[in-house]
Image (cartoon, rainbow, N blue to C red; front, side, top):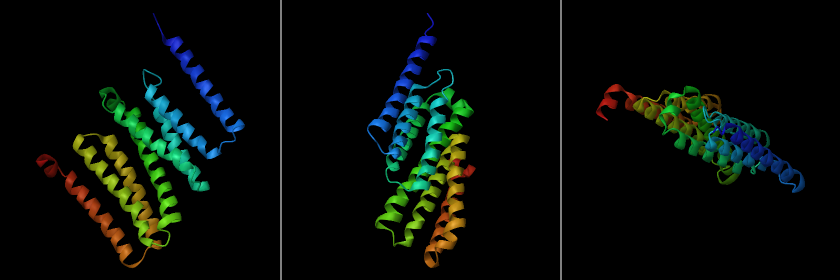
Length: 229
């Protein structure tokens, strides 16, 4: 017996009821608008873990990617600390989805799904890390310490180099490309921001650290090093 129609009815009805709950939560309980990002992250995670639609589960990864991008832009516009919960949930949901899905061969072979999964995780991590950095470092305990500006540049670069090396060693081009996305953002920040907002030893340390990380990644990714590993 076919169960496609009844599964769809349950899924649509459930999503509709969750949507109504969100509307009344916002209207009747006067919940802060920023907490809607956390609700969106939970709904996106539910779609991803439910693998909708079954034949090619792209709805969840798309929802997570959009949640990460919109959450980052929302924080950039408002700088509201209430958005940190939603951004953190988006990173967690994206990481769990990648870890759960990537074990299956069909997911790795589906290029579109693979790109959505890894780029969604990349976008969520970049957006959340910048928001947490700005909230706790720039507006918090390190407001007067210029060295804090090295944290994101070198952190993103280290994450990117690590993904590039791992993706190359495993033969997974999508992981390598996600790593290059981290590297591109880190280098863009270094060239467009750090060169004008750092000086002296801090500026030298920024570019020396970036160069050392990329040279180390090049050495680890070289065919000779890969064969010996």
